[in-house]
Length: 358
Ligand code: NAD
Image (cartoon, rainbow, N blue to C red; front, side, top):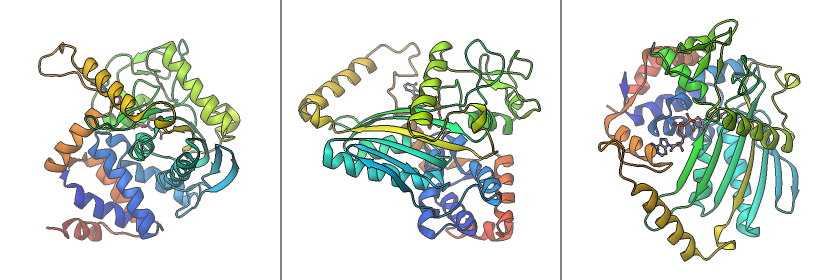
């Protein structure tokens, strides 16, 4: 089905409020989820709500939580997400770290014990919008592993994303590199399975450790494994996420002692830097613009596919989807409606809310 983003926002807000979120929290979680669709990452969109509500019903995800400060010392800020919606507590943590960086020039943030923080690029975008360069490493604990180490035949890691953000110049929007360290995010395998599509080669192993193209191996019992991006390099970076986001924040790495529930827990390590403390503003802008122009000036291998920079595909997709609407496959919508019903919001009511703007 095709749904315009305003209708999807109304429906999503209502479902989140029915799940116990205040209007303010529902608004910000909804905004994060719908923006993930608009930026071409439906894997991190409203299709996550059924997973979130499974955790909500187990009391492992708690609406309306505030972060608590564990350490606030010099540039270092470590906060606990208190099992709140990751989109809410990671936003609070990033806002607090930005405020610190505005005062001191930089901040080192550790967020632990947060539920799924969604599209991690969101927090890089917040930093870039405030004029900061930032680096974010995230790991995933609680749930069992889903990514194989390079050379292995079963999973020992998660999709551990990383984000690198550079603020906008007068000529270019922010550079936002936001990527899983697996070849694909788990949600992308879920979307492929929901659409009954095959994956390409080199994305997953089946439960016997053999290469497969079937995304459903990730939901089979026993389960298969996603493969790391870039072979040993992606594997190495996923381990970096474990040590920085898992160990340094105090949140924990994905070793078996920390695989004790079926709920995603994210830990995030971030360094937020004011580029003006490093170099002149005019120099930063000149170098960023010149480098982007140089990279994008490479003659494209396919004349219909110009060279892009990180963050650009998301902006292109957003412009198109604001105009054309967001495509949501039937299985995802059905699961969302079941989740709504599980918190007392009927399909009839959802249909009315969806139609309100028409
Ligand atoms: P992806 O492969 O679609 O994109 C990765 C990066 O590459 C993006 O910054 C994008 O702008 C850039 N890019 C894409 N095509 C490009 C091109 N042609 N030229 C230049 N740059 C290009 O993303 P992914 O690795 O599948 O991750 C998807 C999302 O999943 C991310 O937002 C990530 O934060 C999220 N994620 C979250 C978790 C979690 O636990 N919260 C875990 C894994 C992934």
